Length: 270
Image (cartoon, rainbow, N blue to C red):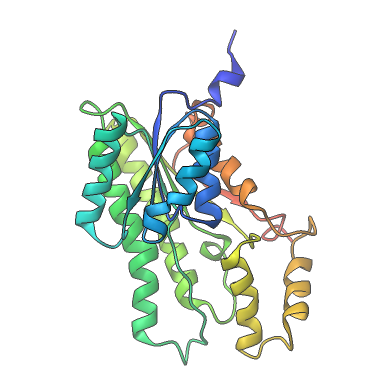
């Protein structure tokens, strides 16, 4: 008989989570640790995510921090090497680090557009590339790559063209990587997660942008309109996203690759 509880566990696995100093990334790192994984927390802030590491260790988990600019290939190589040297292997890579900007298309600067794509797309590309190099069979044992996209990778909104472009690219990069990894027999699964508005600093900023761009008279009005577009009647919580990542990283999702897991309270169904 299959032990379904065990299929959701990550005992003995090692995970690398980018952008994990705060918000969704920190919650993902803690969730993976609670499920049994050792976690390398990476970020450009807070010494690579020292507060997240402290929180994981306080609850009895194993974690290390790594200062990591995801747009720098040498830093990716160093992060992967640290996971392997400090924790013995690498089984899970979560490409969570990302930024956003807001501007009407006619006002968006090329510099801002490129910066969003550099972090959100090039950063994920490098993560996928070096995860495959580390985890692919026969040298590696296979594993799971989870890329944080967004419902912004599925639909459009006014004032966020750069962000939508980047998250759409992550969605299709995920599919291309999944097919390639499967057909080459690497043992690596690649999937993307697509949250709608999540109650984090970035979620608050996203709502405020509608006010700043003159698309809503005030924050309360913008928040009410956006929340009302979610049929479940609430924004997401970091735990909602972290739970999905744990599932995709686990053996419970071993027949799942190249797909997008949408977490949006019904937003894209309405």
